[in-house]
Image (tube, rainbow, N blue to C red; front, side, top):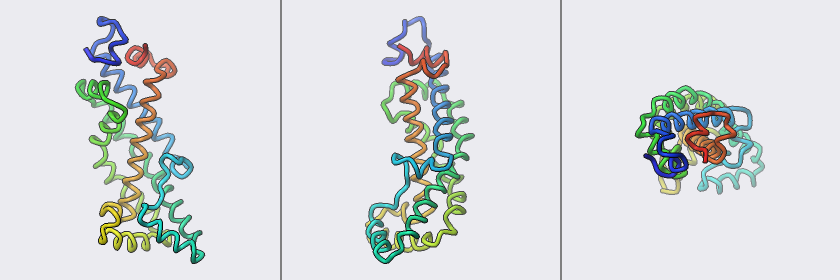
Length: 213
C-alpha cells in the first residue's frame, strides 16, 4: 500500500489501481485547467507568477532603452513575449492529456509519494521536449514582427558569449518557449495541490476516495 495519501483510507478501501486512476484523473484535470488559465488573453501577461520578463542580465540594456525614450518599444517586446506564450499553450492540451492517460501505476504511485514538484517533474519529463518543438514556431511567428526581437537576439547573443546569460536564453524563441513551459508546469502543479487540499470540491468520486480524509 502507498503511504501518506492511502494511509487516510482503510487498507481494504483503496487499491493501488484506485490510487493510479485517481492520480491520472487529478493531473489530467490539472493540466486541462492550467491550459485554460494560461492559454487566453493575459493568461501570462496578467499573472505575476508566470509573466515573462526579460532575463536579468538584459535588464541593464532595457534601462538604457528606457533612458533613450524607447520604453514603449520595450513594453511592446515584453507584451509580445507573453502573447506568444498565451498563443502556444493551447497546443499543449492533447499531449498533456495523453501523458496523463497513459501514466503507469508506478508513475502514479511515485506522484502520490512525491513532494510538491512530483507532478511538474512527471509532465516535464514526458512532454518538455515535444512541446518545445511545438511551441517554437508559434512563438517565432508571434514575436518576429516586433521591432526589438532581432535586437534581443543580438544583445542576448553577446551576453551569452561573455558568460552573462545562459546559452539557451540567447535566442528569443527559445527563451520564451522555455519560460512558457515553466509557467505551464508551475500552474499544473498548483492545480494538483489544490485538488489534494480539497478533493471533495472537485465533485469527482475517485478523487474524493484517493485524496479525501
